[in-house]
Length: 157
Ligand SMILES: Cc1cc2nc3c(=O)[nH]c(=O)nc-3n(C[C@H](O)[C@H](O)[C@H](O)COP(=O)(O)O)c2cc1C
Image (tube, rainbow, N blue to C red; front, side, top):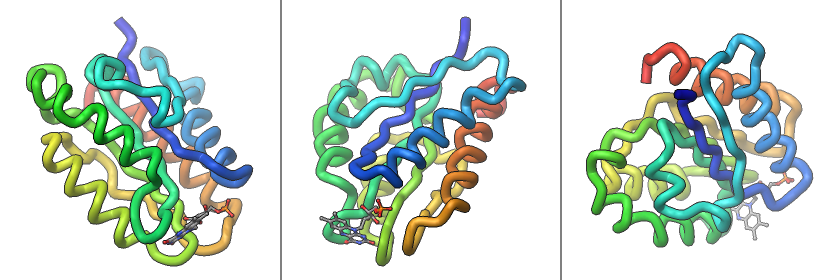
């Protein structure tokens, strides 16, 4: 059966939409054989969808020094239902991408507090797309998508 990878992306602007699309494009590299990937807004995800996944990529802007309200709402809805199913939840491989104009620290700390509580396993260093939008961010996101899909495809995660 194909492995499942979910990209939970809050992308409120044309630039952030490009980054979310690049994450997905990376997972669709021709070398990836046995991974299906879905890109969804946090508002369109629930705990059952998360529990079905073999890995998750979280993408959020930093807003007011914190993760987006959309991602926080996502965590609030999935947190306890996921903890109630430890076999399908614990050690879930994940990666975090933060798009921050100014900082990113608040989002880094806040998301990692929650993923620690969830007992998820971070399998890539956090990608911080920091400052004014640059084309380099698109390439970095595509690479992260590819790395996550390849890790699942090869049974590394
Ligand atoms: C309401 C709001 C609050 C924001 N707060 C922060 C913040 O606290 N720290 C930060 O680094 N960037 C902040 N930003 C910038 C965003 O993280 C991010 O850079 C932006 O949404 C993406 O911009 P772009 O589409 O121009 O690339 C904020 C943006 C908005 C709309």
